[in-house]
Length: 540
Image (tube, rainbow, N blue to C red; front, side):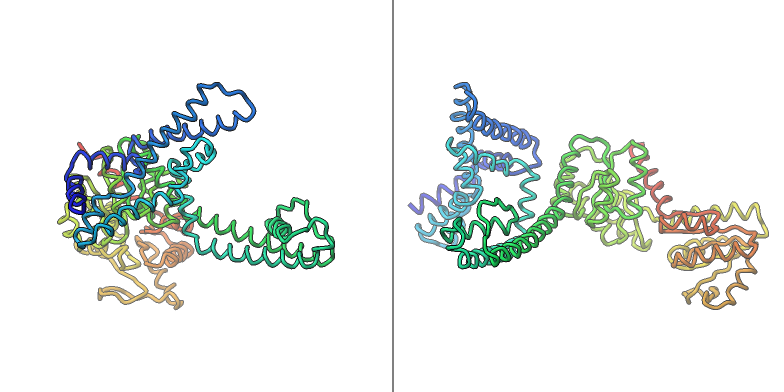
């Protein structure tokens, strides 16, 4: 017998037709992403609602016999078939036998392992519901089968299951409070209250009172009983608040997952999709321009919950999660309607990993990436990144050409740059290499000997600013507050030059304008436009 089971398991394992059929039914019943699963879900939901509706209407109306026949026999037959399929796909018997064969287990151990695994489904909550739903006399139970076919309901129930500790704690409190109040009331009012004839009556009263339902069929008649009742109501309100907060917390954690699922489903019906990995300042500007242009459908992947919510509120299709996760990548690469993917994280390591991961799925996929540190360009190129855009290089290039154009019109103008950090270092080097005479100010010592350190806490810095009243000033300090201060201080001292601001914080632009900046080069707007220009160039 043992040898027969082992031989049978090997045949099943190597039987390609058997494996394909089982995989098909497994996908049909469990994989929410397949198109035929959606049709099955819709069909089963209709059957369940039809059966329950017939049950309800049959209580008060004369239902045609053919309708009852459909409900009792046809629908039940469908549920029998579904139950047998779920029983079949729940476990792979041949794999269990093979595993125990390697362990050289006895025949009994082998058979018990197979039966035990199947029993896990039979006696699971869903298994019990499935078997009861087959029986016509338990047709009302069929409503619980909606759990299989409504993704949102399943997700929310899973979220509640993760709050097991909180609900268990609540259960202990509820049992203790109800039992305590029931005991006290029973002792106090057993003979005084004609409605309390047993301890069960007291338990019933305590539960109704603590739950704040208050049917009124049992009420205390003694002063002590009334006091106990009032305390019970207060406890009940507190527990209801606790339950509400736990459920709201659980549901809130799952709303992003539901949104992601909805966005994934929407992908099937869209064309010209552009995927944005990251919804920071740059990602939000690109998504905004794509939305305004209308040529592409933007899909955002964001693992930060707050940023994900902002993306959703801006009416973008949003997938909450890690863009490099296997689950998200598997779903994305089922699509053939993705024009390009843009990874826009501020971390080069995250961007490189995303590109590498995406290329491992499809080496021909078109991927653009943001780069933060230009010395890592070779790493991006080595993994096949189609386009690498350096936001700082873009803003520096635009500012450089503006400076050249300005100097042609104002040949006697001097250039003064405040700040020698990442915002302006390359711009300064470009100007120096072009022979432009510039002076550099900063509030800290840098690796350039030509930098003049200026202390903004010392009043002498105002004298320095007054001497620059005809210069072209570039504000690019790391601290945005100092850039605002510079612009204001220059303008109030009869400044006749021009103030340029380099900014990488979008929401500060309005303040910079009010402070007196004449021209603002926005890192994110300029870079977003560059990304979209490259997108438009695909296929040309």
